[in-house]
Image (cartoon, rainbow, N blue to C red; front, side, top):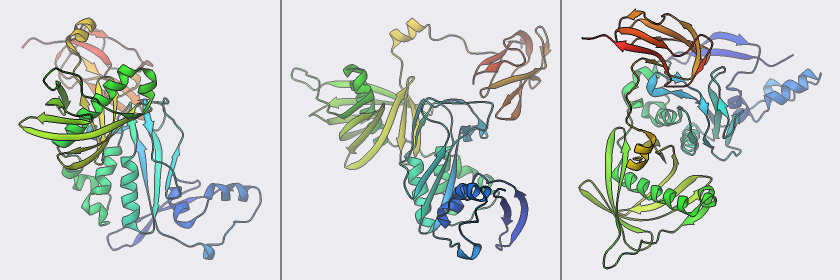
Length: 403
């Protein structure tokens, strides 16, 4: 004996049509539980033990509105390609009676290529639809997730879309509003200034040692000492292939003048470090800004109320030279996501044309055909059928044909 889920679809005239019946609870069952105050899993166990249902149909009451968002390891900017990898940083909203998080992973776990890429289900409740939708957006903005591509920023844009807020939702919603949903707003210069302040906080914590990197309640920035002048420093952040050069002048403690391009900004603010995440509250030219950032593998991940913005931090030249940076790029086919090599269509020495199939990969229960990006001769097969490969791993070396 178990619970079942009946699925319907509704048309524009709010007429319902039966789709299918599943003899199990579906992923969306928290919605039913939040608006009815029930625990369907508990009911299943009681019924299996021979007990009666706790409530009859006429005793059930619907209260308020609820939304559920699936937090997925997928890349919306790459046709929602599923991904895998380590949850290097995972901080969630605080669960409450109005915010529910169902998950089976924690920080440091791996999202495997062998299973569905869902990381968590975020369900929220409100007394009405607008309140619940605002709570959903706020909860999504409180996620800090680094280590693999995910759909959180996309879900935020979806929840904030005017048509979605009005309830004008249908199965073709994403394709209809593609231009608005997949265009991120330009990063403002005040946010750039706040990001620079957070970078100073990460560097300060680094100089203070491992304990400060893990937790430091307040990082007060005293201006470095200079004789008859203010200390100045150049900082560069790159976002979406656009370089932002910022000249920082240290004034009083926690006070700076930052020149970003041809504009100057007066910045007042402090930062705190908690489990590697910098929390920054500052005032930029009279505007209050709150962000949190994580510095990981040369990238400053900047979390704002609009989503996350990765900004690369330049590697010092001496480190690039020591690491042998500046090598040639990959000439052959590469894996677009972590997965398993299922089949090889070519062998070493074969001549291929642009667009010829080279490799079949399996990832997240789906099959992907990797094709030749250029014509040439197969020089080397780097993997065999059954091998696990990482994202961006070179699969086939191809010597390009002479033009």
